[in-house]
Image (tube, rainbow, N blue to C red; front, side, top):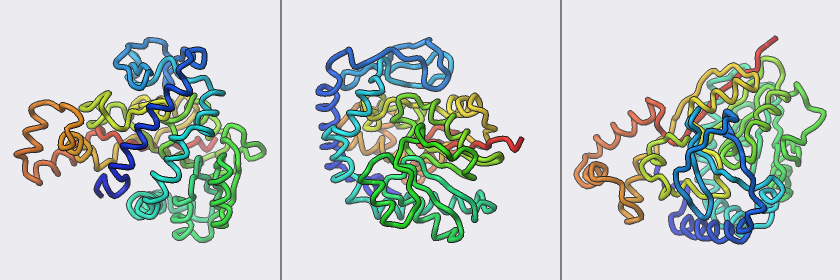
Amino acid sequence: MKESDIRNPCIHERYLELVREDAGAFFGDSSRLEDTPCPACRARKFRAEFVKFGFTYGSCEDCRTLYVNPRPKIGPLTDFYVKSPSSRFWVEEFFKPVAEARREKMFRPRAQHVAGLLPDLARETIGDIGAGYGLFLEELRRLWPEGNFMAIEPSPEMAAICRAKKLGVAEVMIEDLEGADGSFALLTAFELLEHLHTPETMVRKAFQLLKPGGYFLATTLSGEGFDIQVLWEKSRSVFPPHHLNFLNPDSLAGLCRRAGFDVQAAETPGVLDWQIVEGTLQRNEAEVGRFWATLSRNGSAEAKQDLQAWITKHRFSSHMRVLAQKPSS
């Protein structure tokens, strides 16, 4: 997979310009922000790292999570996601043109991974939190035609798309989903935790909705991932107020354990880290250091592939995945 397969560079650049404008328009008033503890471990040992689009990112000295502090209050943040030009642009201009490419490159492999990993759930109730266009559930339904699939999607537009695909729909934020405790055998949350005001609330609600022995599968961005560490504030993955939280494999596993889960795996299966860094270098968007510039210029394709394989194997990719299970008793 190539980075260009899942995001058009020119469209991505325009999106980031809109995010920068929205950050000032929606959160230029400091009264719309609030001090927050670490979103992973709740500690208040915050070390400032850099400022981007007017927001301060810092690291938790206990669990190493990178996060925005102070961050938007929940009301203004919800208002931002509903009304901001960047949010609308992401749906209409950024995601829609590459939706089918993402189906092939991302959502179909995810469905295949889940089907192979948890085959005993083929006839169970599966929920996708923040389901968007329903691509993951569509692909999983092809593999598990006897399953029961629920899109948990608060956006009216996205919820309507999921209904048109004959998926079950709960048109609410997961925190507001009532009457479904102990109903799900699997809940998934893809690229969601980085956006949330309080990730712990969502993870605890997922635990509540799962039946005993049920699974929670989440992907998100790791702040200890290679491309984010190398590019830091120049990273295109770092764009507040959309991306507020950058956990890491240890802090995400810790968050799940505090919610009551047994963590089965916390890994980084990403394959794009080196491509992202090299692309940034080639576009002259940032200095990346003498060694990485030399590797880009003189390194063989095999050397770059070996580097990416090492990054993935040793949990240093910025694409992170956790599988956690609710105890059976």
